[in-house]
Each structure stands twice: as structure tokens, then as C-alpha cells.
Image (cartoon, rainbow, N blue to C red; front, side, top):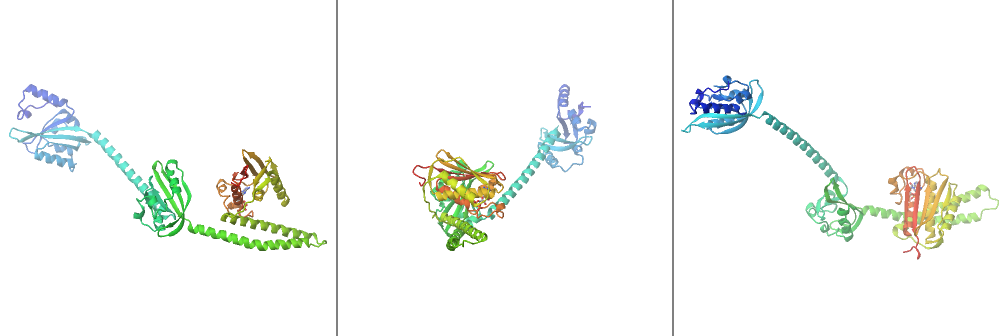
Length: 517
Ligand code: ADP
């Protein structure tokens, strides 16, 4: 069926029979489908097809010859490629298209069709030759790839949208926070800022973004110490924490600003950015100052009448008649004790305000450390019925410092241990010499302190939330202890775990010349 009827060719080719047979065999051996159409006959019919064309289309030669090629398209006629093909045929041009065709069994196949015009010696198009390849598999792969690309693009679009949403979300937070924020590049040029910054400093974007940090305003951030700290943020990742700047700012006047700066770390991106947060603490500091003033005035005012009352009670104690009842005597003692307690509380409050104003007086002298501890413990045991206080170790030498202050520290730590470990049978105070330091530790097996609270208990007026109601106190004992130990060049710290007791320790440096450097 694939033999060529020679008469179909004799009009256009002048080959010998042998050559013709060879050519015909060669074409039949080709894996590409080949057809010839006769352009001089009506409707450009197919006059030749090779074996591959029959295989590709599923039609046999008798079903092909004489037909126009369009039968391969069935009713799929609106393909864009078809119009390109038609146009090329009309203009006698060569063309290559990928077109949807249908096999005899109705199956779709993609036909990569190369169409070329054959002209006679007068330039008249007599035939078209069509060479076709079934590229269905490639087309399918391409379509799948395209589909995957579409899916990927859709995903990227979705991700981009999510990123945009979270960026909007973050920027709305940044714009809402009541803190001024600036993002700096590694050379300290301002990359961006939030509205709060612009409002606080009464400046606009142009005054700020793109400018160097140290040039902003009237050079308020151009402070050598701050510069030094900022420079080390990126290389060492050491943040700047709570740096105070008091300055006469343009437009807003004298203000106290609190600065915190961190390296921005976003999984490897933007590593070389610095976020600077600036908080105006002028008002807060003023309120704190007023509170301190109030405390100082109030405790002074309370102390005077209390001293008078104490004097009168002492007179009354001396005047107690010999035959006074036990009840009478016990009321007198209790009154005197409570006056002493009140006196101590007021003295502590006064100490706090003295520390705040830097007016605390320190009277240093040599005293026997072990004796001081023993006497303090004795006095405490006499004052209340509590757990036994056991002294372990000793210092065995004199210490040069303010004895009454150190007594205050030991007393405070012991009374806290008693107060916050009510069920303990004993409290241990351990004395030792560590290198050229005295070390004192007070250990209890009480309620312990959570890690979070440990960071704050040395602040004045801080008390752990849940104990506020159950135990009396003002939250200044540890603050005073810390200040006193610092005044002596030492450190005070706590090791504790919630529910597992606490150990408060402090060290005091031994100094031959005394500790008043
Ligand atoms: P106060 O005892 O008057 O509250 P302090 O400054 O002495 O004030 O102590 C601060 C807080 O630290 C206490 O309120 C308490 O919550 C906690 N604290 C101090 N000592 C202990 C301790 N030994 N065990 C558990 N918590 C303690």
C-alpha cells in the first residue's frame, strides 16, 4: 500500500524508474510523515503520502490520497496555528507549525508540521510538501511543565501575599508602639523610622531618613560613649541597654531619653542593621523623683514625733510602779518593742531616700567580723521564736567597714530567711574567706524564688507577687543590702529555685588600707 503509483509523479518529476523507486523507498523508511499536495488542482488534494504518514494518522493510503489535509483536524478548526498555516499556503511561503490533529481512531496527536511550497520554472506553486512529526509526548511534557510552573507561580504569589501581609502587620505594630524606633545601616545612616519618632522629635521624614544618626537634630546622639557602644553592636552582637541621654533637643526642649539598640537578625538577612529604640523617660523620672521626695519628707516627719513617743515610753517604763500587774508590764514592753519596729522601718525608708540622693553616711572602722555575726544572730534569736540559726565557718580576722551597715545586711538576710521559710527548723549562715574576700551565705529551705523574680528582688519596692498578702514587708531590705555591699566594694547575689529554698551570698573585699577606695 505504500508503493507509489508512478503516474502521480511523472508530471512533476523526470526521474528514471530506478531512481524513483529508490526515492520512494527512502521516503517510506523515514520516521517523519511526508505528503505532497497538488496546488494546481481544486482544493489542493494530497497526491502522495509515505508509510510514516499512514502510521502516524492511522489512515490508509486510499483514505488519504485525493483529500485535503484538513480532514486531520476534524472539527477542531479554530486553532490559531491553522490560520497561520493557511496564510502561509496562500502566500506560497514556507512555514512550521505545531497543530492539533486527530488519528483515524479519534485520538489527538500533536503534529509538528513543516510545509514548503514547490514552484515550477515560471515560479508558479505547483505543489506543497508537508513533513510531519508526532510531538505529542514532548507537547505533553511541555504542558506538564507549564502546569507545574503555573502552580509554582501561584504558590509564589500566595507566599508573597503572606509576606506582604506579615510585613503590613509588623509595620502596623511598629507604627503603633509608644516608642521611637530607628533602623540604621552599618554606617549609622537612618534607613527608616516610625511615626512615633517623628512625632516625639517634631521632625519629618526628610529631616531623618537618609541622614547620619550623629547629624540628626542638633547632634544630640553624637556622644562619644554612645558611639563606642553602637560601634560594637554589629561585630560583637552586644546590645546597647538603657543608655540615658539628657539633652536640650531642638523643638522639644530638655528631655531625658532612654536608648536601647540591638542588631537586627532575620535568619541571615539584614544582619547588618541596627534597631534603635528611644524612650522619653523625662516624666517617669520626674514622678520617681517626687515619690522619693515624698518618702524622704514623710519619713522625716514621722521620725520626729516617734522619737518623742519613744522618749515618753522610756520615762513611763522608769515610772512603772513596783506593784504594777504583769499585764501592765507586758503592755509596756510590747509598746516599746513596736516603737522599735516602727523606728527601724522608718530608718530603712530614710536610708532609701539617702541612697537616692547620695547622702548615705558611711562610718568605717575595724571590727571583729565573727563577733559581729555571733551578736547579730543572738539578737535575732532573742527577738523572736523562729528556727535555729546555725553559724558555720569563721573569718578569724578583723574587717574594716561600716559595722552597723554590715549588721543591717546580715539582719536583713536572716530575717528574710526566717520570714520566707516559716517551716524551717534551722537557717545556716556560712562564713568563709575566699581569696582576699570575706564570703557570707545565708541558706534557707523555704519557698525559693523563681528565676524571673530573682532578677528583680534587689530593686527597691519589689516584692514577689504571690507573697505580698501573706508576709509583711516593703520590699526595700534587699535593695538596701545590695547598696551597702556595693558601697563596700562587694557583690550580693542569690541562688534559688522555686520551692527549693534560697541562698543569699555576699562578698566583701579585704583591703589592707581599708575598703574606702
Ligand atoms: P521584703 O521582705 O520587705 O518584701 P526584701 O527587699 O527584703 O523585701 O525582699 C524582696 C522580695 O524578695 C521579698 O518580698 C520576697 O518576695 C523575696 N525574698 C527575699 N528573701 C527571700 C527568701 N529568703 N526566700 C524567698 N523569697 C525571698
